[in-house]
Length: 158
Image (cartoon, rainbow, N blue to C red; front, side, top):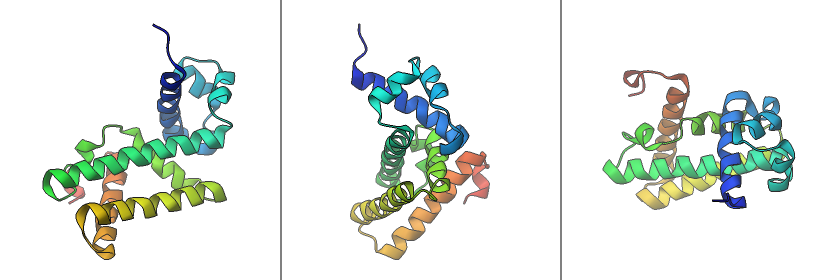
């Protein structure tokens, strides 16, 4: 069965999320992403205009994964208790942190800024909470992301 362009794009995104999570925007190599995805490097540029476009697509996917994990955790018990379990992709928080680290680039900074606002607004709508409460909720989520990235024992994150 032939792989569709959309399936190949998904494979490249997952490979790139891992690569960016491990090496960051500037040090990640498209050749390594291509090898990880099982394609030629030029094919990446058939799917994505350039490395920045690929990075932003990865950050968008990670943003959606994190938003979905927040939503799942909240809907289960009204808290973040299950956030780490709900976050299926362990590279998601590392990749997101790499997005923050690359925010010296104005386009990436704007993307990350809008994502923060979008997530905050989503959580306000989901929970009905006010902005300060959602800010504390998000701060706890970022702490959990950092804990996951550093493999901090759960008892340090309560």
